[in-house]
Image: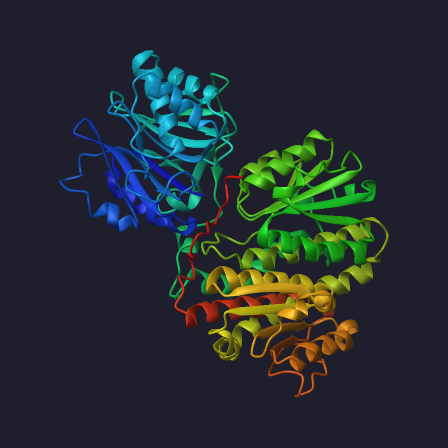
Length: 608
């Protein structure tokens, strides 16, 4: 959830640190800080608030600084204050940390008994001073001190470390939280994700679980179990322009506009002669004939994509499918084994709960497939197979294009599963995929072109305190995603319900003037949905209906109607979700909210 950047090389390290921290702002943070060498002296600068608050405290000429580490913090232990900001340490060692040290209280008590004092409330300070103890008091070499420290810690960490008498080296440790080493011209970087260093390099090494690293200007040596190890150098497919706003007011707006292109970009390499082809991914789709059940495990928006996929695997491939929240999965003693395929969906590939679920599934003998966006991420590396989405970097905290491309890719997988299981003929599959590849992106483009129309609807709900989304079938899952988007960036209290559940309690919350967004894109459910719309309308709700082009919505049933472009019903979710994303975007803009960095949220949730 926090961000780490480090640089050692021929350039000014402080400039690289500030630039890298700004590139990591999208992850969410409440304080920032750096540690750096200047004139051979280890210095720190940190502050609560925005990066500028910290940068404004820097004074003097920084051109002599060639080694440093930086951090953006999202508070977990202790409030967002100067004292709780990273780095933490002593005159001998400074440390930045992503993750959680679960046994910090016991370590802190032990170190207090040894004469250490603490200036913050954080778990990280306990780790930093434990490292100081092994390094300075036990006089261990840096790597041995780090290894001794990590052996005592319970929890997760990605760490960048500086020792005062090693001004030409950055040390790293990783367990349960992502960290990469970037290879630049005339220097090296460390970072919590590739976005922080794209201005300077696309080449990087990902650290694996339990690995340590020693990084100098000339080289990076990675240690596994105390032994130097060789690793392949990866190359990011993104460039720096992909991670910039490019003239849009917000990253979220840019990413919504990219949806047609990224849908086509993800599907095109996986289609051959009009049929699915996953050979380029190294994924043997014959497994769909061998397994008896799918488990889709994910969090938040990715979980909503999984719910949509469940419908497609069931209706097309007749393959039983369960969708489970990753944070609950491993605590519910899931019944899985060798006859199951567990599909993990994660944009970042680093979601802590999803990674833990993946490891549990593997321990029980299930086959695992990852659907992720970031090449070389932890989930991608640990799954038995991985199919990458080609969405490019998603910077806005609220996920948009990632959902669209995940659902499109999962639909393609469902069609392939249906072919493998003999539930679709090649001709049937070809017809469905022609619509997916040709019509669906065009329909999404048409919805984007109607942004002003959607903005007018947003103006109708921008002053609301409460709001409800309802739908049936696929629309109930769209309602859940639409509600999540709206609440996370506009701060309007919003709930989503299957429309048939209204009479079982929720209808008591429908009062005059409360907005209800009703989704009506499934033709076989039109009549029942219209009945539900009339139910809430009769109780004074302001009804806004998002429906298929042929839905017969009477004027007295809806206060406003937004019709989708013509599209096969089973693909209506793609333009429909784009409309819901734009509705959330314009509502948040009307309310003056921080659209790309909503309060209390982080882009990549790397702690449980």
